[in-house]
Picture 1 (spheres, one colour):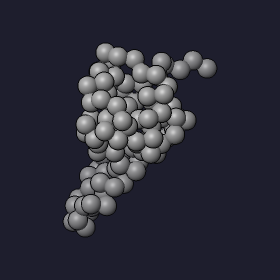
Picture 2 (cartoon, rainbow, N blue to C red):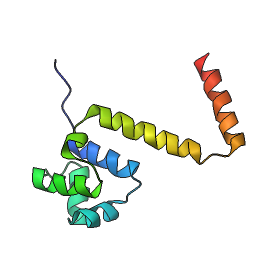
Picture 3 (cartoon, rainbow, N blue to C red):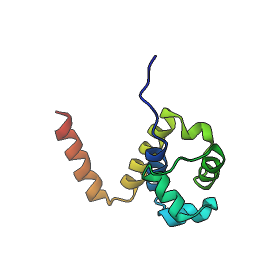
Picture 4 (tube, one colour):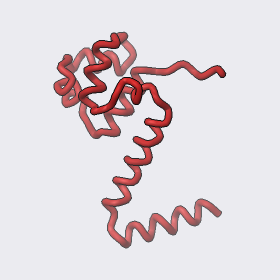
Amino acid sequence: MYKESFDVSKRITYLRTQKNYSVNKLANAAGISQSFLRDVELGNKNITVEYLSYICEALDISLADFFSDSFSERMSNDFVTSKIYRLTEKQRAALLAFLDAMAE
């Protein structure tokens, strides 16, 4: 089955923002320069598997998770769930009412 090409730069940016990491924080944790990471995220530079493994380690994920569609879905679900838990009871009730209205 044909899949669209995988965009490594977009995946790095997505996972970094899901972890609420700045470019600087991730670069420092991965032991790479901030400018290099920014260039990779912008698609201006390619990244080697070695450097990608440093980034994955800093994000506390495996290379397999990095390339896994199901992992991204879990990350997204975890992100939404964490946001919901931060809401007050009143906000959760309003969100539920909104979701019910959208589902109709």
